[in-house]
Image (tube, rainbow, N blue to C red):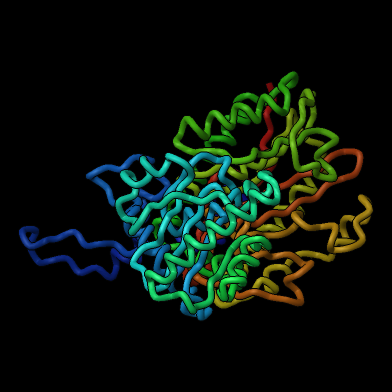
Amino acid sequence: MGIDAVHTKYSTWDGAAKMKEFAEKFKPANTPMKFEYPMIPDYKAYRGGGTQAVDFDNRIDYDRMRKYRVERTREALKANNVGAILSIQEWNTRYMTGTWTPAWTTPSSGLRYSMMPVTAKMPILYEQGEIGYHTRQMAPWLDKVKVAITGGGWSSVIMGRSAHQAQRDKLVTQIIDDLKEYGLAKETLAMDVWDPGLIEGFQAKGINVVPATELMFDARSIKNQDEVECLRIGSAIGDAQMQTVKDMLKPGVKENQIMGSIHKTAYDLGGEVYSGMLVTSGPFSWPNSRYMTDRIIRPHDIVYVDVYNTTYNGYHICYYRTFSVGKPPQQLVDAYNVALDWLYKAISVIKPGITTKDIADQWPPCEKDWSDILVAYEDQTAGSNWAHGIGLSLYEYPLVWRGCSLDHPMPIEKGMTFAIETQHGVPGIGGVRIEEMIHVVDGGVEILSQWPIDEIVVVDR
């Protein structure tokens, strides 16, 4: 099956068919002087396109995206009978506030934080140090930008016990004062980082504290059109990163050289990379070492690359492709076809209304195919044949894995986005790994990743 057929078979968007169907239903005026071009439902010619804001195209509407994310958060607070969420986790703070500062604040430093009172129009941002001077000017949509009191998260622990307690008490007082202002002093407070010191401080003041992790994952699980467009553009950057791999792959190149080059590709195209990606070659391809080294790539090596943690406007992508330096052995071609079949059997069942169990059922028990690398328990397959929700963080709802989904299924809903991946291999020869980025739509999926996947990419130079 060719690449176009593979992608079209399992995607609800077939441009030619959709246009033909629309044209057949469209009734033009009886004179050209009365003819008007109609709006076409699900028109997507621009999607995954340029990264700039322009006046001639309807691209990402950031104001709409920010308002959507705030309303999703508010709905989650109401559904859980919570008065406010205090977020120390950076991805949740970005989701609620639409702000971003240096990567050292990730994921839960306590150097900055935010709070969304259910009665507020927009959240409060508590910004690190003097950065708030700029943030206040750059984020006029926020109700308030205040000074962060460094008293929670990992940054507070390294200041010593007595200093930590003093700073914690200041932070608790700050938050309680703001809760009072919004009429929420007696309401439950949700926290997305379970900081024992802060919890103790709030409880001592009579504030009931509950975890907010699941609450926020629920809110973030359904993306609007602007969030999906961020993921489309991110996937286009990922496609370019795969082209960079193909262009430079040859004997004598090191894994970490490839890593450096695909970082550059991401930044050249307007993306960012947080914490790294993955380049695996030769003997490290089976079992999968899931990292990169300074190994020199040699003739006949299998190489696979995962561009995970490449982001566009904070939205992560994650997908693998497999390359071969020269013609791959038939055993690995066969293994690749098995992995491809597993991947697309799973993709073919995805649509709103099913559960994660329906997806995981498409994959065989681990001991059936991987006993030759000593896999005997599903717990050994975490991160192997599975799928994970993706958005502002690499892992979100839903997680699909035989280790949890068979007995504890989660619903699949329209608007979810996730990465789905499979692997296979032959001990002593090598392994292959592939992955797609998908968006759940009515009746099926839209595949966001577009680099060829129907066979191992052979590079022979």
